[in-house]
Structure formats: C-alpha cells, structure tokens
Image (cartoon, rainbow, N blue to C red):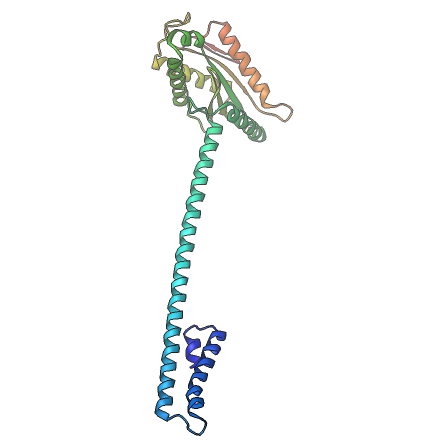
Length: 274
C-alpha cells in the first residue's frame, strides 16, 4: 500500500500519515470487539481492499491535479515567453524608428546634418588609411527665399522634396551619401572621387534638376528652380580634419553664387553651360 501510494505521486510524509491512519482503522475494529475476538479474515480483507482503493483513488486524484497544475504552469510559461518575445520585437521596432528619426531629415527623408557629419568623419578616416580621394559637393537652391515668399511654404516644402529626389537619382555611387545640410542647402559625399569625377556627378545633378523643371516665377536667374554647386576633393591625411574639405566646398559654392548661380564650381572646373 505504501509503495502504491508513492507510485501515485503521494509525498512521502503524506503517504506515511495516510497509511498510519489506515492501519489504525484496521486495528480499530479489533480494539472495539476486544482482543479476544480477532477480526474475521473476510472482514479484514474487506477493510484492506477498501483502504487500498481509497489510497489509490486519492493518489490518482493527486496525480491528476499535479499534472493539471504542471500543464497550466507550462501554458503560463509559454504565454509569458510569447509576451516577452512580442515586447522585445516591439522594443526593437521602436528603437529602429527612433534611430531612423534621429538620423534622417523628416521632410526629405535624406540623411540629416548630424548623420552627414558622422559619415564624413568615418569616410575621412577610412579613405585616409586607403590613401584614396574623398569628394564633397555643397548644393544650394538659388533664390529659395523668393520661391517661398511667392508660392508659399507648402510649395517650398514640395520643392525641397523634388530637389532631394533629383539628388538621389543623380548620385548613384557606392558608399556615397546625400544629406540635407540645412534649409535649402544639401551636401553630397563621394568616396574615391577626384575633382573631375565629383564635378561630373555635380553636372549630372544639375541636369536632373533641369529635367524636372520646377517653375520659379520670381527667380532672376532662371524661370525654373536651379542649383549652385561647390565641389572639393582631397586625399585625407592625419594632419587635417574633414572640416578643411567642407570649407573648400563652401568656398567653391560661394564662388558659384558670385559668378551668377546655376553652375558648378570646383578646382579647375567652372561650368555654366551643361
């Protein structure tokens, strides 16, 4: 009986207590009838069978409840795991969204100025080790304030988006980056591009914008939106930092504006008839 109860998952202490009670139950009739009147074998057997049946039934019930609790615990654990996985996926999605918001310009979808500066510094170090040229284009929409004043800020926002699309279409170089540098100014990073190669890309940008043909009724330069582009290229060194390249490109951009706008200026290149 003790072995059977243990087999049905009774805890040892419980099994001993139950069997002690059953044993007392078997002896109780003998005490009641008196020591000189031993219990009849048939009645003793009946008590024995009934006791064994009760213990077996109780053991089965205990086992059923234990299995049920174990199953419920397993279901709960799986549910908690699923919740944890869903939470982790949601957290990763939100983190990715925040990273994207932190690195891109909300209006144009291009890299923002912070990302531009980080990538420029990375490319400077990398190409400095490789001793390959790094080029930078600084692009400014001509007479953009007049465009906004004439057509409104909603049209100005759409214009910025169209210029961004033209830049992305024209700049298709490995490891390149197109960024909104601020306001109506854009910057383009070109890896392994010398001045002539970078100037060719700048001319392609200018042509792409001409093909779009965004009307500009208040521009003294043209009846369509145009860009002035400054080009600079150098092989990075440890003795200089990327801001020297940025200053050179800014100077070229200023020169393009001084020479009449809607042109590319950089190094030996000065093109206004692309």
